[in-house]
Amino acid sequence: MLTKTANSGTGGALVEDEPRQGKSASVKPADESRTAKAVPKSLTIYIDGEFFPEAEAKVSVFDHGLLYGDGIFEGIRFYNGRVFKLEEHLARLWDSAKSICLDIPMSRNEMTEALLETIRQNDLRDGYIRLLVTRGVGNLGLNPAQCKRASVIIIAATVSLYPENAYRNGLTVVTCATRRTSPSALNPAVKSLNYLNNVMARIEANLAGADEALMLNDQGNVAECTADNVFIIKRGEIFTPPIHAGALRGVTRSVVFDIAAELGLKISETDLTRHDVFVADECFLTGTAAEIIPVVKADGRVIGNGKPGPISTRMIARFRELTGETGTPIFP
Ligand SMILES: Cc1ncc(COP(=O)(O)O)c(C=O)c1O
Image (cartoon, rainbow, N blue to C red; front, side, top):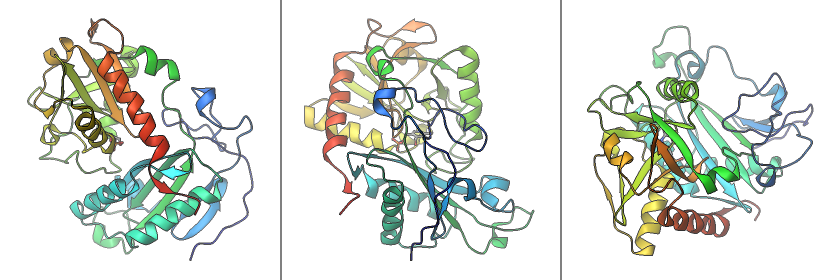
């Protein structure tokens, strides 16, 4: 049974790429036209069956999600009153849970209802959901057997990862020295709360003044970026690294496969090197927050003619049509 508590205080839009400052989550939207509200209002957050105003939404310091990054998450978008690819995100969440032996304390139907209700409580039609399942409260030892029950947290907010001109002009990426975690250590296919590997890569991109970091695996092949899958286009064909190269099985990545099939474009999974990226005609990244975004420079090499290419542009256009037209309705 879902309950709602009084919504007090001020807070507001979550911008995926910006730190939340102090108590209020008020951050400057990167793109005014695609985000909400001049006056940010407090978010209503779901924690284990109850709703809390943002300022009162708290978890125990003994939750192993905090102590050890022991837990899993999903980032999900909703557009125009519909949640995009909800079933796919929940399927991946359940796969991640199985992989780390975590019991999600609710059914998939209950999760769907909790998620939709959280969006309704926040009165949003377009935005971003952060869904977390933590190992729950234990003691200071890392043994998860100490944690009796996993916790479910759902945050619905607005998002704007990149400004609109980044979609028109493209991003710059650098290859970072930090290698993507080996699948034999912690498989990147598990969307775990342990993102320090990605954070370290992101720091390298920041220090280099680039928009994103290209992460290689232990073999020196491209794995993915810090929060996005990577695609290149060469002579009209699309290529992306296989999951076993150390990538998350991205939901947006699979939408690109669908769109390619629809447009009659050849697409394949293959090992890619930095060289392949440098000499590509086009390159783009995919992720729930970033959507499909072109890359025009990698390690100082201009990709193609330095402008988003025709296939990337068609992909973005079709993707935007799909996000606007399909998905699970939020308001029945
Ligand atoms: C490491 C990583 N790779 C790729 C992706 C893209 O996956 P998706 O399209 O499902 O958001 C994400 C984002 O969730 C990510 O965190």
